[in-house]
Image (cartoon, rainbow, N blue to C red):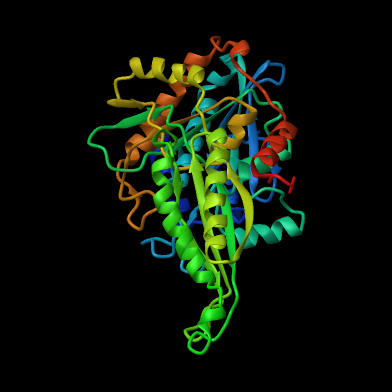
Length: 424
């Protein structure tokens, strides 16, 4: 009855966050709202703050060997045309993170009120992380220069700060895009990782009418690059869910001057780090060849986005066990990789993680019309199912099936991916 009794209040909190979206590392109001709720649910709650707006709280005795993190994301997307976007910042909750927060609060309140967490052979930390969405980069660059953060993503930043050092595995949840006829969850939905590439094509400017003959047209180089990217797609593996989206980021063009500099930016998404490096070489070669073909040059810069996310199949097994005994959820999809990315991929390099998807929405995820349509499922039925998953895990986690890597190993991998042949 706890989930049913708390439903209206949880829904009210989540909707309040939905109507007050904040971008990453700026979630001050959201942070205060959630902490106020936790303090009302549990007057003895202890909050550990990290980064700018992240925080963590733990249930369970410290002497328990196993430690599980249940992770929720606080930030919104930049989508100024969304129907409920913040008019000043352009932030909008059209990725469903507000429902993650509501689900986390529903689960936390259930555990506190029922006291069932004391019977578990593991302790549970609820980790509320900022800045999952990879955007508003100029602001984050400023934070990096001020030495307030090191990483664009909230989870890598938390990893650097040691937030997950004593945690054995992580559980996330995320909205499933699209509308479903039946209440649906998914498991083992692997995500792509991505690089952020910039290509500055360099030519020679001349008067476009008087002397185009001695020019080297940087815009034409970028156009040739787009053609090369299009033609190269048959050489890119379908199984890797490769996505490339070149856009012109900077130019100095006018109609009477041949442009001498054009910067093209693109993300490069793949399902594995190994293929990411292989595809990056092909992309770089296309840029170099396009520049050489028109006697120009190109400067290439590579920035790491997020690592691919390979969900832990062992941990997903407990979700399947709970689903088989559940009579409130109709459908479970499995093994359906997509090209979307998230910083959960970075955390999954350090510790095993799963992300359970849930339906209950309409519109396009990250689109202008995205909104929930089945709040009862999202804030009552699905959290009750998650409680079943926790019960299935109690006493049954085999530590030998878990792994741990250090933050230093993570940084080493990132450097290996983005480093060029000259060691830059």
